[in-house]
Image (cartoon, rainbow, N blue to C red; front, top):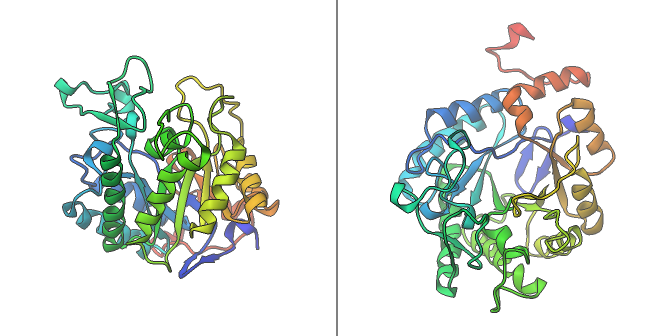
Length: 353
């Protein structure tokens, strides 16, 4: 059997294959409420045969949204629709996962098709929070540096969000610590100029993420998997580097994180990124080899043979796919045919097999 379709079990959760639907913002919610778009979008990828299906980043607070149209998990009223989505994903044989996030200084933005710029307060935007009062771009909203009390409030928001995720029926939680959002902003010396216990040294800059993990673990059962997505590098000589990610992964493994989802970039507006097929795979490979933790590879992985080779070479343990799943919700079905694998199809579709 090809590794792409080889099952894997983490704690009490079994994944039928190594194909993961990566979190992808849909900018289609209202006041944080998921709706039928999210049900059909995520449900169709589960029908298509993915082993693990993640929601988009779910904001742990209203001010933590990337845009006014993000889904949220900051109030109990968000649970019923998320519960419906998680149940449908699971009914199709996939594992339902949710990504918990706070956008930090990259919050209060318009949807990409509306230009993506930050929304002024007068037009429905909101004040943005960050480790330090450093805007992402010069033309964006003023940034408020978090106080210690506010940091504690955000930690509590992650904790309560994890409790709601469990109630909604999700079996995997991923903490979003990548792409220039709040946790990544704490990690990177480019965006974190604090002089207290959350800034300065490497140990201080990773403190917030470690505390987020521990806050989530207070509500998230120890027998369910916990993932963390990181940007393995800022792609800038003065920023976060791969060796920092390796050191961080040692800490995350020690405190009980199961999988590092290895992405990159997002904290600098005009970083020079050498985008090419599989360009982020070396990050997953290095972190896996140096620490022994399970990793996920993501980034321009579009072909079945390519995905399987990454696993065969032991560069990663999961293949996260985003845009390819937008193009082809049934990628696993097609990949199975390419790799001469037999996988079950929904009985409603079997006549087309």
